[in-house]
Image (cartoon, rainbow, N blue to C red; front, side):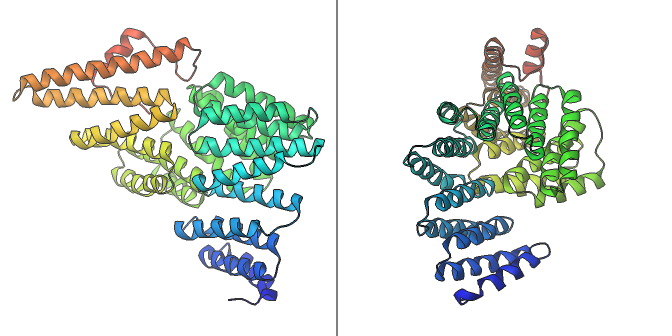
Length: 441
């Protein structure tokens, strides 16, 4: 154990090693955190453990959780209110970035409660509104979008009128919640409000690039890939100018997918580079890019790459309790198993994914899963026709029921103003759902 007065030396060594040996750097940050805490420098100890956590997440989930837990324990020793609030908020955001969402939620709620007890002032109102916004971010990551939107509504009412940066953060988070629910009109409207607020706050280029990237993602969700591409490219260029390498990598998550969906073949060498990028991203972005690359590999018939990406990033999503992301991997892999004739396993994964989507309120994804379920059942029915006509008839009836359920969900989304899907010809759509065409995901 380091003596308390030597933690700065360990910190300096960790900073130097972070680029070349992040596992060792994480251990040094952790040792420095313990030494700083033993010396009574509690804010520094929380910061050091936060750094250790964000490096451990790439290699060791147990050490990631341990660093987060130790930082939370040290927090209670910080006596100054302003310092506690700042360090607790930074720790909560880092825990969310590391995918420790379940553990981040109680901390987020504690920050909200703490900020609500501050003596009344404009700055206290802004701190409370920002704490509510951060809680909503954690709720979104936990798949609790309705609760997040309710929390953001409270934050909107609490934020002072001229607190433009906090207003921008709140509206941006509203956009995130709506986008994940495929409420694209509401999402883009919220992003516009966020952009206006950020400009009023001084037009921080990072804030504006984040809005551009997520607005492009919202456009991509509607199938407007040509319109989305310039937004992703604008955000990437801005992050490159700012020297934000990690945000450049994050932007590549959407950029790669849009380029592919515009029909641009991605060469194996480029896929290798993108896979390297995915591996160095923080967990949530890594999992999203891993899913994109897995689907691209599947469609380009690169089965070995698909299996590798599904195994690595799908398991990572499950390990980190990112249930919606895990369901997306399972839905994709079910289609692969269907193609191999492994119908029983395909059905199990498909139904599990559908249940996850429905629980999270992601109706479009649930409809796609029901769509694919109908196709699996239809293939099973064809295989059973000659040996068991009664079973084949029962399977076809269940396939028809599932297909109609998918159509009903899509119709309900359209009638509610949902804009997540391109306009389609209804008879053709019904024929696809019942006729064996594997849909894009």
